[in-house]
Structures are given as C-alpha cells and as structure tokens.
Image (tube, rainbow, N blue to C red; front, side):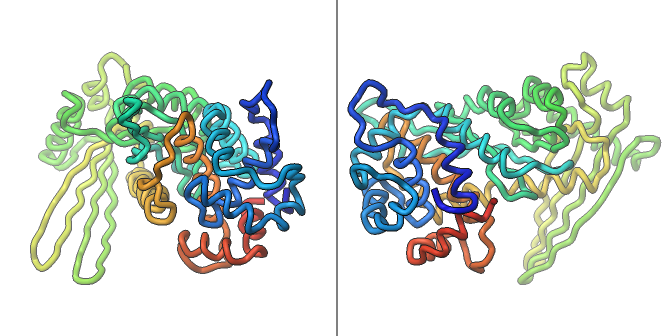
Length: 380
C-alpha cells in the first residue's frame, strides 16, 4: 500500500479470509478493503461513494495496488463486505490497534454500546444492530467492537470483547448495563480494574450502596475509611460542582457483598453533581462499585473519562460519518462498514496537522492526496 501506517493496515488485513473462494474473482480482497478504508477516510459513506472515490483516484491507487481489472463496482463492494466474516474483520482491526499502540498503566478504557438506527430491514425481519465498542481515552483510540442483536445482549457481548483486548493495568468503565459479576471477573482475570455504574432498577445493590453512603454522611464518615475530592467548572453563567466520595471500609464492603460474588471489589463510589444556572440549583447523585483502592481522585478521573466514548466516538460517528443515516444493511455489511468507520476515525483523530474537526478532515483528505498520506501515517 502507501508509505507509513498504510502498509501496516494492508498487512494486518491480509489475514481476512476471502469469502469468494471457489468463485471467479476479478478483484483482490486486499484491494477492495484498502480502497474502502481510503474512501471512508476521504468522506465516502456508501458503496456508491466508495466506487466513485476509486474512479476519481484510480491513478493514485494504481501506484500501490495492482487493480488487475480496474476499480470494483459498488455492487462488488457491497456484496464482498456483506460476505466477509465480521468476527475476522473485527479481530483484524483489534490486532492492528494492538500492533501500533501499547496502552499505558492506568489508561481508562470506556465500554459502551451504540445502535445503528437504519441497519434494520423490515422485509427480512432484521432488527437494527448494536455495536459495543471500547475506547481508550488517553490514547484516543477505538480498541475494538463487537455486534449484538439488541441492547440487552450487551451483557453477553462485553465479556467476549474484553477477552479480545489487552487491558492489563487499565481501568475499565461501563454503564449500569454492564454491572455484572461475570464482567467484573473477566476484567480482574485480565489484570485490569473496573468502575461499574449502578442504577435503581438493578435491585438491591444500588439501594445498598446509596444507603451506606447516606449512613456514612450522617455520621460524618467517622471511623469509615474514605476519600473525597471536588471539581468546579464555571462557564457562560453556569456553575458546576462535582463532589466525589469513595468508601473502602472493609465492614461496609462485607455488608455489600457477603458472599464474595464481586471479584476484586475494593471500594464503592458516589458522585454528586450540582449545577447552578440563574440561581436554579439541580443536584444528581450517581453510585458505583470499583476494584480501585479508594483514591477519590483516581475514581473521579475514571468517571469523567467515561463520557468520552459518547462525545468522541458515538457523537462523531453520527455527525461526521452520518452513521445513524446509513442504509448499509445486507448480510454482514452494516457491522463491517462500522469497522471501516472505526479505522478511519482512529487515523483521523491522530492526524494533528489540520486544526479542524473530523468532518472537515474528511473533506480535506478527499481534496488533498498528500493529506491522505498524512492520515494513513498518523499512527505509524
């Protein structure tokens, strides 16, 4: 392929099995994958747009791809990506990320699901798919993703995704859907730590943590092992105060988990977010269980970092890549196209010479071949 990281991308995805074995093949699979990656970086959001990109950049593409029969048609792109084994494609993506970046100790890895709204097909009785993704906040990388049939299946998908990732020394944050003993155990066995959110609809666990914090505050935390930190943000007439408490008192933890079901449980956390706008005060409290030792500053950093997967991944995919408007849905095409977007987003996040948003970077890449090379080399 091209210079720099482009070569590593092509090398990594060569391991994806060609689903057309036994059929006449006019276009090499690695050519199809490479063109698709470059096209999505440059603004293509459909198979037709990928084909048009290929024709407009054919001379450039021929400088590093054989293209024995020219540019594949949009039907070929759609048919091939509908057949590619999505698990193989997702694992190739994960291996590529692991080959180019080693996560540092204490890295916060956020895990959350996103529904691809227009991936449904009523005629075939196919529901819209969910993709569970992992985001490394400090490294600004999507580490991997896994498809689920619906939101409730995130519970089974998250442990599988975690098994693919290298999370040793990392802090994994998951919303209340992922607050499960199996998920906690998977993280600890991988030598990571967890911060798991709680909600009131989860039964007694949330209520018990809430009651323990209420009791600790009532006695002013006397003889209760705990820690506290606070942050204040003021902007445009809005004042936000966030207070973070952790409790690592052994007696409290034994009461919370008498049978030791929560492997690695070492603390519980509470966030009190107070917002003041025009003298109107609103207060929200959220509760967590953690395998962290109980330092409030570390807990606060993990909780704040979790929202990055919404702001820097899901929101960007909707705004800059129009993911929620995508009508790609035949076979495995929707989840494989999601991987293409994730590859492009990782590369565009790390190209820093253009001081603009992801959508503008995609436009610039479409206009400027030299800039495409910068993007492809941004993670080398």
